[in-house]
Length: 306
Image 1 (cartoon, rainbow, N blue to C red):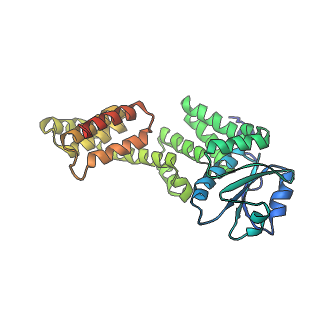
Image 2 (image 1 turned 135 degrees about the horizontal axis):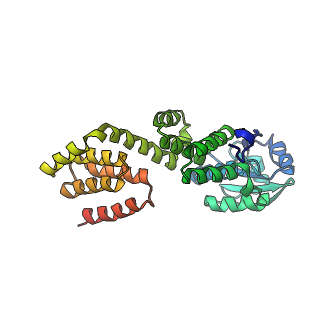
């Protein structure tokens, strides 16, 4: 199928890396000259700066989504203090936006990603909103929601060819693989993911989904047997945990969490709170806004604080 990434599934042609480190020696070329063509964000940071470590991933995510509408240059003020002094940087992190060789906007502190996006939209004239990557992500998500997992997966793969560190595209690809019974390929992709990608909460949630699916597959054929064991002995906690895995794998997440909640109610401390720890994995896999998670958290609180 044709996509907005290009005709007949061809990925967008690659451009220069939108994120790079700069020094005093390269500042003119990387920032002053480069900003004549495209706006440049300059991130002043230092290795000892805690808020810098919070801000940088958000900056990189917004710039990558912009797909060429802006660039990001990072300057370690410990290694290149002259530029920070010349621009009178008072504290870090500080971000300046350069356009046509001049600083035109900026902010200080570890601001939310939404505020970074607003800055990028201002200095790029909104071009980042219409970037091919952003459009492709929207299209792929729509296909995923519509159940066209093969079509969505193809677009997510194209995005990753252009931007290998794009977390939403990687998460979407994993979902597409799982939905088309290619869990082994999803596991292989996770095993090869970068440390940064693997640490993302969305990716970790999918990894948990795969783990639970694998556990459920092992118990899938024993639902009747496990239920019989529980009927005979309601305090057979291991059978409840196994039955929860089987029910989740069969698509009955509500039934799965009900088994774990009952185990916690009967003996919350069994095997070092094994049922509660298992339940938290289901919450992670389902997501915090899933109705099953919301209801189960309420019921868990009632049990724990009864």
